[in-house]
Length: 628
Image (tube, rainbow, N blue to C red; front, side, top):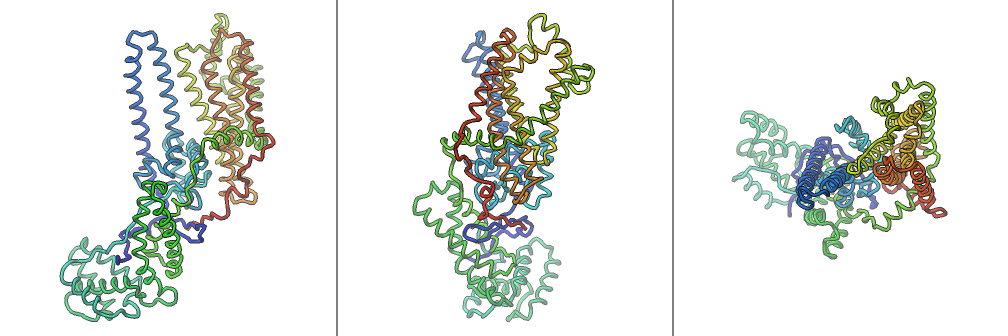
């Protein structure tokens, strides 16, 4: 029978989270530190960068090969190729993590290589909703720039190592190290062999000679003795012998020989289930539980390793049944061992907790979202959320359009104000607007070859701005309010400047085709940011942490709508809005069509009971998280 000494001894320095399972068993997760998370992020960044490099090289070789060096289609094909690269870059930045975390049960390639995993509060597998929320919130976690200063700071000060995105999504990043039962290192030679033979022939005592603390001290010394200098090793051996000397029957040989014999005797006694010295009551059962369960635990560990690599679905039906049965037995063993340990931490408890944690994460993994459910989410649930969140969206609209009107009237009456609130590029464009009007060039000129790239860049930039507007809600709404106000001032000031020069129709004709969808998307994303602010300022009956998770899920529905609208608006802005030869009536007709589409979309699901989860059930009470 293998002994129950765990090879890993550093868990005392880990940051632990206790999780209570539906079986009412408490196990511990080791929270992933900043270093391991940074290493995983670096691997993922290198993968994304490598994909972009490969795609760039492939396109650069493929376009000339398909079109020919002198082909008139080469420029057109190259333009669309560049647009595709920009779009792929956007998908890699925002979709890479969500896709892998959902398909690989909370792991990206980088996380899997480092041995960490994203799980939801309560130890459940991460859902696509939670993954999307935590990764969209990277818009603020990665600040300043892409240095992740805010994310690192929030993870460092959080007791559970959560960055802001984890707080909103209700997730934690944990280590997933599979530890094993193995014999501790002892010296070879006759001493160890003699001690083993003696203990195997002697009857089992009522209790061991050492307490658990004393045995741990002796075990650590013997494990590290070879790293000590000879004089220091001899000095410590003498001190330990003085401390344990009255419990050594045969005081023959060197101090080290006697300590090795004592250690082997104690190890063998514990392996047989003998209680430690001083243990009373339930504590006396600890070594019995370990002796009886060690073989089952190692068997389950091997099965768990297979399941983690291939997934439960890849295992034969009999193995899955065996996995479930053994998991329940291990949960019971862990509960009994915790009672017997009486609050004392030990290696076996850590080992068993790791096994239960791994089994729990696999058994309570959420099912893959079917395409039908995803379609319903986009076409029904998300627009229903827009109607439900009408008040925060209206507040966001006021915060944007109110300053816009103020800026419009201020700049219209005094164009000099524009230099204080608008960027130099916008002022220069307005200065050239009169000359462009005379030549019929319109607000801006984008050639046919540039339009695919322009549309893609516009979509990417606008979506990222709305992500930041949403994520800034974690600042109690201050960041969201500032972004909405400044955006409104920029819009109103630009129109006011053009009006002061008598060419307001020029900028309005440009904005009309895409403006309805784009401005609505910004207001809807702003409403999502205000929902997060509401969770912090007015959490109601929930804790702020719980309220953030609930409102984060609601806000994700709003972000889904805003992203969809911006995909359409960006395409129109890049492909249609710059066309100066289009009559204004055509562009206003496009604006009307987009308004009708928006009205149709936002009325989807009227009269349907579309709330799959209420504020009370979204953060279920049967999944408590107790941190220490």
